[in-house]
Image (cartoon, rainbow, N blue to C red; front, top):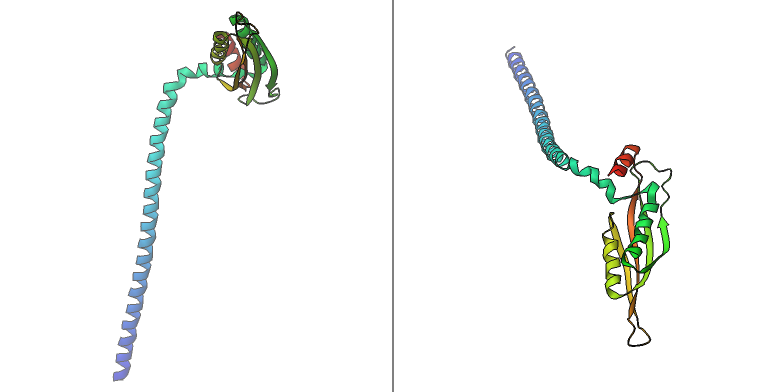
Length: 193
């Protein structure tokens, strides 16, 4: 009976160690999960605060530039009025008194495109004029009321047969602009400017 009492005490002790060990493992696992969850939540809070700061900065920029937005459509050629761009290019030659011809025109078809769609319109211009007039044609081309790119500029001297006649310059270049499909409200406000 004496051995039996020690065995019971040993079993109770082992049971207690197992229960305490199990409780320790459970508490350790629960604490680690809580710490991992807490760290994840802390990262989410920091990310949300950073997003809020970026949003505030963006809103300040947005509100600070809102007054300039009404001018933005004027930098683009309206897709339904490419002819105005072509007429403005043709008027350059008339204004400077030089023979200016448009040898090619290329414009994207945006008839059925949704508002805000961007396309390209480009023209190839050939002219023959004196040096100052040729430079003025280039200058006026860059000063069109649109955001334009002047590319492939070629200037070739055309020497006169006699020394008393003036030399002329053959000017050739590409002029490209972006066209945009405007919404009906944007188109009406752009035309009133």
